Length: 126
Image (cartoon, helix red, strand yellow):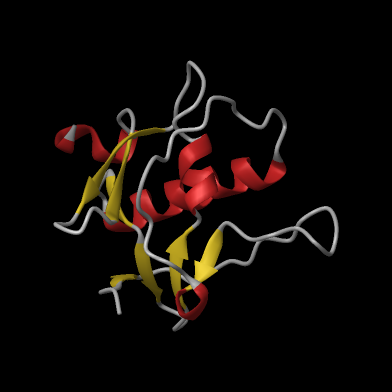
């Protein structure tokens, strides 16, 4: 079982445009370790799901005051989640890629994502 990092904000569910929309986080009991290639060669233009994913990552950056975000999260409200592999992959695509890189453990599993750029709240840490 992966080690989850506590984030002092509540989990917010993604409500998609239809009942089959998938979330941007996977419940830890249903997740597989994130391994292998991540990058996608396209960004889902206008994807509300992808924009929601990036907004949630910004919430975590603001809460932790760090651009290095854990993949396995324990929310203040008690949920245990893993970031969605597809959303991570799409964040590498395009000229304005959102994620700069990832950290992996000795098994090749992604443990953290590193958000590109410098948020105003983190000016001293960039």
